[in-house]
Image 1 (cartoon, helix red, strand yellow):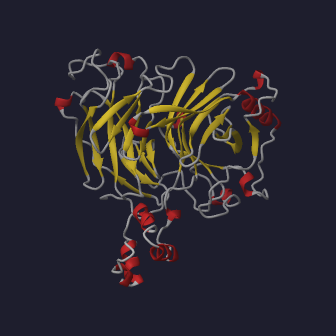
Image 2: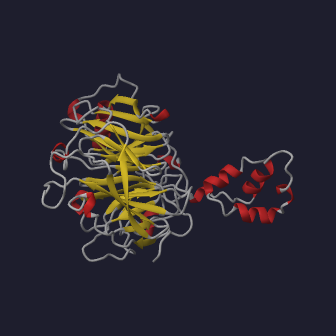
Image 3: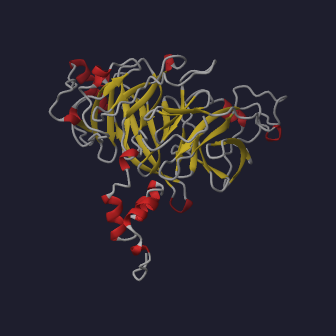
Length: 456
């Protein structure tokens, strides 16, 4: 607003508040900067409900590999929040042939098998119409699809679902125009997209920008079943982890994609694993080297000026930490008192679908409180003088990135969950997370805003 423009100043506060409350949260937040009067009005009437947005971490959703076809997901929950999230998902009607398997997630929404979009915070869910078969002209009818959910409640209540073609283990040349010697990913790259705004599926083609992946379908097939494929949505783009460990960045606004080499520059060898995710500065990559030292690297994708370069944020030898955790587990020294005077030192709560309310009431304290990751360190990894014996070391497994802090969640020896702050190289124990084997996991941020956009 210009200093001399008094037209808006004459609008009654009630009318102005009514207009402003219809803005998306991001636009409403920007409106606070127009002038002091608008800021006072927005703050005074609490128009900007940041507590309803997915801005704090509730816990870690995960599914065990041996129960992927049947049992519901599990939830390892932050004990400070009083809003109960039921991981059972039993209120979702299941279609024959489908279970409650989590396929993808984005900013508080889950995508389940059977094309179900679900908000666990509000227990609202919708079933999408089945996608049409791929157009024969694209040659994608013989390919499998990975799915991705794109949702940003600070911009719009609408969401999109993407079916991203992935190469099959065995390619039948009689059902597609592709051969094992065909370049992958192709250009154009045909993707089926569902929009909740139009409630329809459409096919979009994306053209390659920049250099090709220098890979064929045969190159991809040899790695197809080795690792889980990660897909991340970040500020209008999809980041797809390809079987040869390259990253495909798909820009949704201009219909192009480009292939980005992984931080290693090529295919990973041996017991090294790559994990893709997003955190406070953008898209991150975690590399865990399964050697005796348990080396962990965290990389940030620097997209400044379109350069697409990986920046090493942290490179540590995790062996002293894993050794200490092993000894603490042996001594059963982890805190297990939910009535600890410091609420941030209480262990996180392991919720199953059949958890009783009285099982979690002791831990539920505040409404939507953010866990304090600055307390209760069990180790500072910068201290390299800690004596350790590799016979006591335990393996580290990736659980997810914190969406808004430079923290990676790890699972130690299939028993203990820890938060590792890679900006300060400090480790905090979250509690016991006993599972047989975790297949799918991610940090969950609940979204409490409005109705889930859908038709049914």
